[in-house]
Amino acid sequence: MADFATVDDIASTWRPLTEQEREAAGGLLPLGSAVIRHRFPSIDSRIDAGHLDPNLVKLVLVQMVIRVLRNPEGLRVMSLGAYSETRESSPDHLGLHLTDDEVAVLAPRSRAGGFGSIPLTPGLGL
Image (cartoon, rainbow, N blue to C red):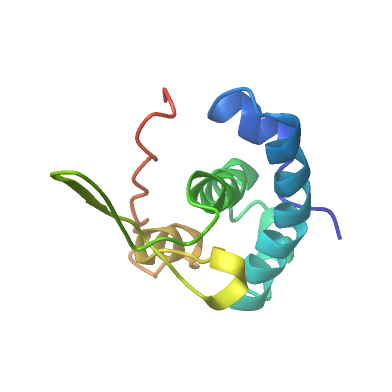
């Protein structure tokens, strides 16, 4: 099965990637696609049937990969002098994980027809 996004999707959404980041992203995309398919086994058929916009799935996968590229060591807290930053971390899936908001976006719509909202990653210029 094809990945839901490409390395070029990441670069065009976020910023130009270094060769090392392109290589890492190329390895992360199939893993992230597998995480999405594991959580939502019918996602391909929902896309094919027109019940889910493939661009939403692409956006979710791009965000998953960017989180790992921004924080490849999986650091939770980073301090530099008086500055301290807390970062997301997940030992599962090499840090590839779906946030609650991303799950809400990809989940089948309820009978009420509501969609979840998806926060865009800061700095993506979207």
